[in-house]
Length: 254
Image (tube, rainbow, N blue to C red):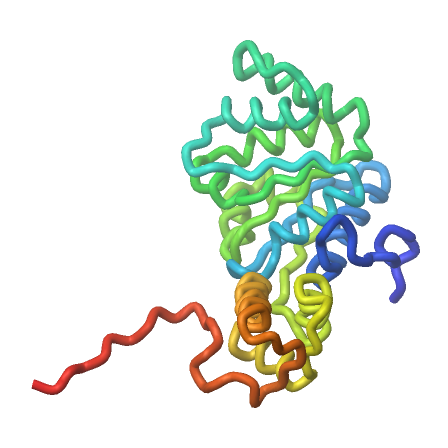
């Protein structure tokens, strides 16, 4: 079914970012939250394995929608989360946690059509901070997207009051041929890369956008050194591509 929102239907390369399918999935989630009916919950969860391009999608969506976005750090506390949300909203972060919570609620409530994207939300779950997110959403009614790894939904299920306020769960998917081609067009626009080589890139990279980018950069560097600008599967030897696996130790004869 075609989404009626024009922002979702016109996902194209913008601001140095390629329009991958996970971008469309994330953007559709945001639009679902923004256009939800009265009395419906406004939390959304975008989850998937590392390297599938979730943060990349969040940056793209931020560019399109003007969303606020914070990326949770390992050392963050409730205070750190609130300070970063307020800074993102161009507010001075000061006072007690209770005061900053009220300020965050008011900042988001002033434009409850503007989403808040919280990346690395697993860390909030691990530190028992999801209830603070629920409180902010509950009182501001702003759409909030929680982005995290594959286990994030299971962690949210453990916090019933947060789980009950999730409107939709959207999984990030591995990149396919079209995604890899979009990345190649963005990062290697002057190179001719055959379809069979694009398919091999997807296979060797296990569909991970980050690894596809690394391999495209390798091809680009090879092009600069060799002067070649056209490549196919036969252009590279077996074992040339980056797969994420560490090199095996070579056994030496005694």
